[in-house]
Length: 69
Image (cartoon, rainbow, N blue to C red; front, side, top):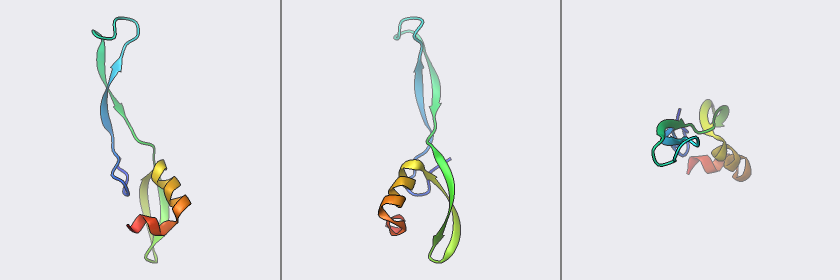
């Protein structure tokens, strides 16, 4: 999933094993953003947006007009 406001998306990272040396044991993992779906009125039209929780907090703090910028 992807945030409609900031574009934050899934990234690939390394999982490091603690049982052996951290240099020799690595495997891939996926870090997912905390995406929630919210219905909002944009220009008088109800729309469903996928937003990360950081953007949702920003919208609650600054108001809905901050999303249009």
